[in-house]
Image 1: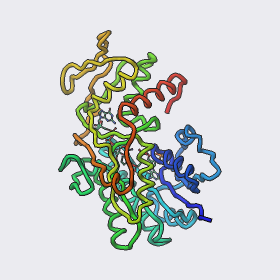
Image 2 (image 1 turned 180 degrees about the horizontal axis):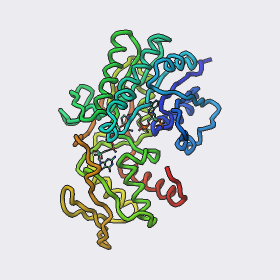
Image 3 (image 1 turned 45 degrees about the horizontal axis):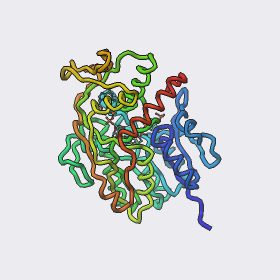
Image 4 (image 1 turned 90 degrees about the horizontal axis):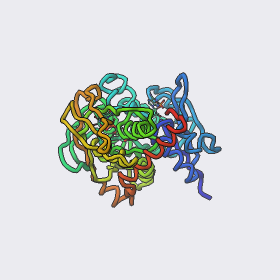
Length: 347
Ligand code: NDP
Ligand code: GDR
């Protein structure tokens, strides 16, 4: 009989952690998920997925910045696979808190790598790398061998963790793999990120709970996929025969403005755009009412203007393929936010 596999997921309270836990439980894994000690712990995502009290899911308190507890965690859980999803993951905040971001997002993963090296170098390790490492892009589309040029403290911190994963693979033979994941969204996305901010606002506008949606740079282009499919890619990355680096992306890019238009279309409102830069506004084509406004307070000190990823390596080597279109994803997010806002849900 095959032994039950044990997985450790850091950051189970986040979007990807919740979906990955759901996937691994479906696959029969014993899953340990870590959450941070805070004044009010937030399990809304795993509760919404209906897995919070699953008998094969164990939740443990842990902070990625603590080496000692990383070692004890590895000893106590004795996992076969570790998925490091924990991070200070919001690019905007990383400009205001660069040191904290470096400690959590950059050095944090090294605590886990050290713990693996000390406790059991056979443990497989997944690092959540990011398209933000490409930053000011050096090639279109971006692939595994495209040179990096991060444009935020978050991107720089992630690049350090990415190279440390490669370094532990080459120095100690640890099965350390990196997924360079492009933006992936879902109804479980945090409301600070632009897609969910938009779909939540569109739902509130529809329900008469908000007048105007204020956004920053509407020209930024992103390659947006569906988070549930991306966590499946993470799992495939750790099932490969050899450790490596893989891009997961859709190979389609759209502007923030396009996503706004798409989200309003999901509630049958056509948006007309007027003005430029700081003065651009989006109007309802039927009533003329201003529904979207640019507010420079959401601009970043340095911006990543264009991301589009080529997932060919993951498609060929892992059999991974994105399926959900951006229109379907956007519709799904707007519908979820309409349901939640109608029910007074506040996350
Ligand atoms: P979220 O921001 O939704 O989740 C981040 C998780 O990390 C949360 O559970 C958070 O806990 C936890 N965390 C933060 N700081 C610490 C710490 N010091 N110790 C332990 N845990 C901590 O991110 P996503 O789920 O969207 O992303 C998952 C990972 O993938 C992140 O590393 C992100 O940077 C990376 N990534 C994400 C992409 C995306 O498009 N979603 C694309 C590429 C990479 P708490 O709930 O307490 O804040
Ligand atoms: P990103 O995601 O920075 O790509 O990082 P985010 O959704 O925050 O921004 C995407 C683009 O939209 C522009 N934008 C705004 N962004 C936010 N949050 N709020 C606004 O009001 C707004 N207006 C315009 C941004 O300037 C940017 O260009 C996400 C995170 O999940 C990272 O952890 C992950 O590594 C990358 O995706 C890939």
